[in-house]
Length: 144
Image (tube, rainbow, N blue to C red):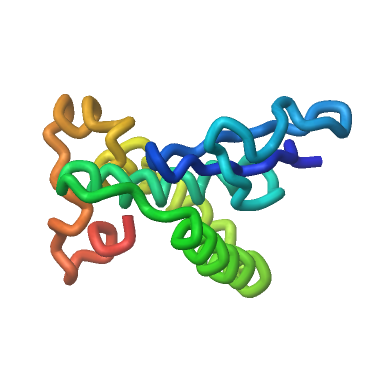
C-alpha cells in the first residue's frame, strides 16, 4: 500500500509539506502554522504534483511575483488529478515503450530544465538548456 499523507501548502512562502500518516495518525496537526490542506493522497502522487508546482513557483519567485494562493493550488491539484487519473486509466504501455522511456527520461535533469530551483546546481553544472529550448522536429527532444 502507498504511503498516505496530507499534502499541505503554505501560501505565505509558497512551500509544500508532506504530513505523513503513521499508524493511522497524522504526524502533525493539520492546518496549523500557516499550512493548509490541499489533499489527502499518496506520497508519490503528491511528490509529482509538488515537483511540477515548484517549477512554477520558482519561476514566480525569480520574477518577483507572490506565491500562488491556496485556492489556485487546489485548482491546479484538481487539474493534475484529472490528467494523472486519465493517464492511469487509459494508457496501455508496451514493454518497448517502457524501456524507451526509462532509457531517455532523467527526472532530475527534466526538473532542472523546467526551472525547479532545487535542481539549479544540476542545471548549471551540466549546462543544461531550458526545457522549452528544443528541436520540435526531434522525437526525443520533443518528448523528454
